[in-house]
Image (cartoon, rainbow, N blue to C red; front, side):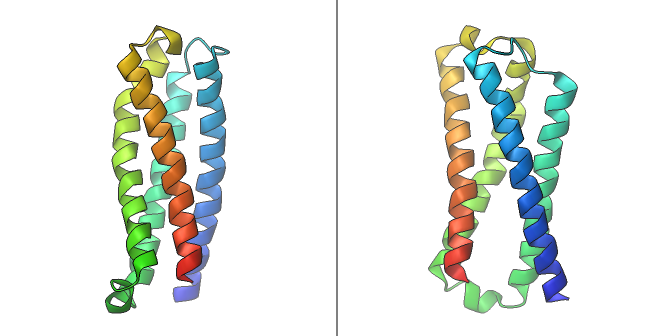
Length: 140
């Protein structure tokens, strides 16, 4: 059972990262001004796909961790990975809150503080996905 869940975990990671690369390139077109606004339905579907992937990763990872939790809670790489996963969950809520701006306005027309939040969110997302992946590779 563990190997099946691990396979689901890895396949979900690959699929989710693929969607994230697409979402980031789509958002970059908006930031650069190539797109005035982003399509509401498309953006919501993409956000839902990433949220589903993150949820499946958390559930499958939680199952795998439950088989050796006492050991993992003493592993620094595991704790670092959990920090990055928490950052991803919080950032997903931030993205959900702010994605309406991309549907309604040009990036350049947004208030400076909003643009900074969006840049920060992108930085947190990239750092957290890469950080969780590196921590997982170090852990195993």
